[in-house]
Amino acid sequence: MNGRRIFLSPPWTGEEERAMVSKAFDSGYVAPCGPMVEAFEESLARLSGRRFAVAVSGGTAALDLAAAHLGIDRSWTVVAPSLTFVATVGPAWHRGARLVFLDSAEDGNVDCSLLDDALVEAARQTPGKVLFIGVDLYGRCCDYAAVSRICEERGALFIIDSAEAVGAESAGRPAGSAGVAGVYSFNGNKIATTSGGGALVTDDPSFAAHVRSLSQQSRERFPWYEHREVGYNYRMSNIVAAIGIAQVGKLPEILRRRREIKERYLAIPGLRLLPPVPGENNWLSVALMPGMESRDALLDALEKADIETRPVWKPMHLQPVFKDCKVYGGEVSQRLFERGICLPSGSGLDDADFARIEETICTQLSRM
Ligand SMILES: Cc1ncc(COP(=O)(O)O)c(C=O)c1O
Image 1 (tube, helix red, strand yellow):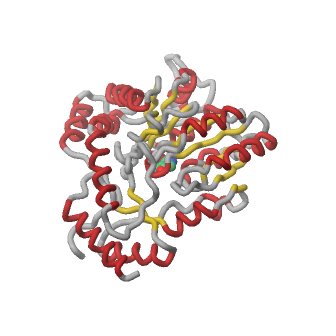
Image 2: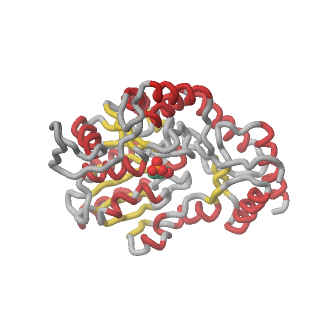
Image 3: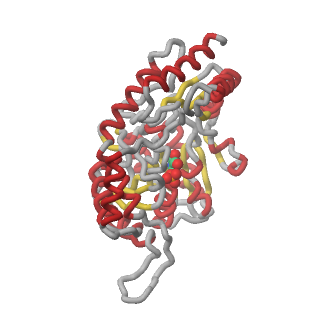
């Protein structure tokens, strides 16, 4: 061991977050409502360029509420990139939708050339009931303009899973601003965290109002508990929202730090990174090794130096649970999984941490 363990993307919090939590606590709103939740939602609406934001208990909860609002069920086809975290499609899977996966382009994001065919075929299977869930992989926005155009042409609904992309942009458009709704995650490992939390952003007032109501057990405005439908308990707490306000306030500094880390990785001789995407937030820097063996050797070497890393997401079409789902292509995302390593990218990474990571990587590369 060479010192403390270096984590992949630990929370970067300090006095600002502590002060906001104290303020929330002192206000008496130790509850899933309160002024911090409202202020956090306002800051997220500004950040996303959307009219409305609804703060909830996680990105998965936001995706679940979007699926509930849209009425996703067995009669729908949900198309999504294969290279993502399972939560992108979890809510649709639980609702019985037919899942279809698309391969990646070389930058890891969805291969847009597959989208048109997939949506045409999906519309044949489930006419008028097709949803595309786009993903901004590792804080790198997919091509919002191209995806929006194809979805519109083919009559498919589009929501964007920007769980990993808070603060990123697609050709000047903020992450989360495409489609009928966008989703953010504020999990502990994300670029901005509330310890655990998420949000849905949208321009559609009825989408926002319904999701807000669903997140609070769908209570009607009566003195007693009256329900026209059954909701969920997904609302974000006031205490947690206080952390989020401080984190969003620090986002420019967080983005600067993550960019610096990426630049340091880029400067390591012989280390190849996932091709850059303009406007990315550099949530995680991802290295590409020549093959699976060298990937595993680097993973092992870093683990021995007490440095946390992780292979790139294992594509959904390779997951046992989705073995019967249709996939378009699949070789590129499989290759990225077999060769890709997510490297430590935390905003608090210091010179000594980076020197340890760099030394381990260079030693390993010199053995190849
Ligand atoms: C692409 C993607 N979608 C959804 C989620 C789910 O977010 P959460 O962990 O906040 O539920 C995550 C992250 O965890 C994610 O990476």
